Amino acid sequence: MRITDIRTMCLSRPHEPERQWRTATFLVPKADCTVVLIETDEGVEGLGEACSYGTPPRIAAEVERLKADLVGCDPVDAVPPRPVGLNPPVDTAAAGIDSALWDLRGKLAGQRTCELLTEQTPLTRIRLYASGGVDYDWENNPESVVDEALAYVDAGYTAFKMRIGTHWAWAGVTVERMLELLEAVTDAVDGRMELMLDGNQRLTEAEALQIAQALSEWGWNWFEEPIPQTDIDGYARLNAAAAIRISGGEQYTTVEQFEPYLKDKAYAIVQQDVGWCGLTEGMRIARRAVEFGVPTCPHNWHNGLMAMANAHLVAALPDTAGHPHLLELNMFQGPLQWDMLKYKPRIEAGYLYLPDAPGLGVELAEDVAARFPFVEGPWGINIER
View 1 (cartoon, rainbow, N blue to C red):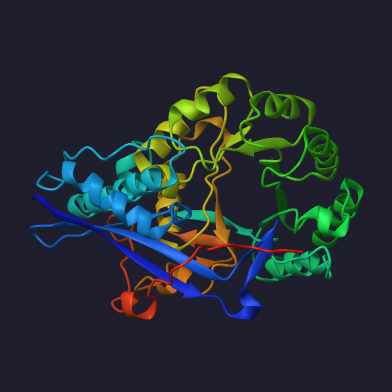
View 2: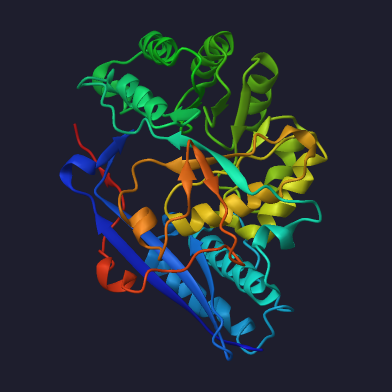
């Protein structure tokens, strides 16, 4: 068997006005998706999703460039491109090819991808956490995030991650006001869900420490990327000073990028994303982190195909280092998220059940290109206030 072509499918779906979400200083008017397809001379096809933060048309151009080293190769022996680090179009293109190659190899072996990634018995279901808190506006009923959290409780989720809202300066928000809202979420949930906060790298170290100490007292699970990601010393200080685990690394794509954070104890959880780094490098990062006693809980923001690849990563994680075995699920992606697939995998009581089918276990919907034609333009638009 030989690889005959690698191509890219760019998809979009505009959000209805009521589905558009906002955080920091931008508004998101659409959902994007970038699918990488590996074709073979025997008709077996591999599928992978590249994180669309790399911008779909630019990812497609990089896939076209990278495929030259793979076309004509046996997919079992083919060496996937490795991400280079902090170059989103290149890294995400490499990640999409790598994930598609693992899907193809699973299909050829008649095994689920997670079974190829580990020698241990992989998990068959993955606990999901509802990832949201991106729809509340500090100038218009920020307490709506409390109602959002309660809706996830009612839907059967056992964990929820929220963000820190629209740009604080627009509404004069202080750390104290943020803490009031976080305490309201804590009280409303009343122990029925684990809670996590994503700072989106927007806080100062002093602000982050004050919030981290409060979250520690309230029993929150982790505090994600509170300060700019390049401040390794700041992360190390926060991680040492607060009981809550400090996590990060979603945009990092190589072991080498994670290495200083691990050596300096800057991350208590690493959050590589298969859509950014691929399954090969994702597992390499997880195994290196285990050597430092640091667990993995991958970032996963976009569509169902990427969610399945990240789910197989979680299913294959080693038992050591206390992995949360949790998977992020974007609650604001809209119909494109699962309608891009022929069949939505089983999600029940907050768990994703891995299909029995080989590879990643899913296929594209037959009419996906016609239903979700690509919409030009950025996925996020800056808001002026």
